[in-house]
Amino acid sequence: MEQRILLVDDEADILEFISYNLIREGYQVYTATNGKEAVAKAREVVPHLILLDVMMPEMDGIETCQEIRKQDELKNTLIAFLTARGEDYSQIAGFEAGADDYIAKPIRVKVLVSRIKALLKRFDTVPNEAPAADRPIVIDRERYLVLKEGKEIVLPRKEFELLALLYSKPQKVFSREEIFSNVWGNDVIVGDRTIDVHVRKLREKLGDHHIVTIKGVGYKYED
Image (cartoon, rainbow, N blue to C red; front, side, top):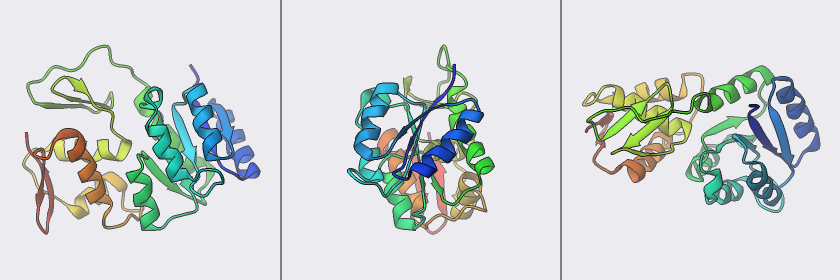
């Protein structure tokens, strides 16, 4: 089955250019030119991924992302901002709104396609059953699956990667530098508060006691 991507941008030439290249890669592509149209189209086609601009008429990208996250039928849809707004506060606002990734323009088509493929990997396998384990939280990296006491929790990509890193070595204290390197990569520039935002969101979903702050150093995972 072709994976569905919804492109949302108020510039027709960008929609046309990106659509052309994604269709060549075998994706089923839909487009919208403003936030309200994007929400309606997303509910209609239930895309696997939404690429969303920030600055748009009718409803901006942040509001659109928040509205999409309220829709039950779209709870598994991935959202990535694709925008020229690269400021720290804009990225933080995007993640706060529920985005899975934040991609800054300009970006080469091959790099964009690679980022999209990485995001969509979680749809490659649909698990038939949850992995068995005695731990209160179970992570299956191959299936991009997180279970808390047997209940599945849907996490945006970066939250998942952060949790998986900490979970890989319980009690080990990961420095902020290690986390940046492993989760975001050395070639990606993110703001100092980015880790804190993601940790706070994980605590809201998993409970406060699993991720422990080591003041002045970083974070560790505890069962």
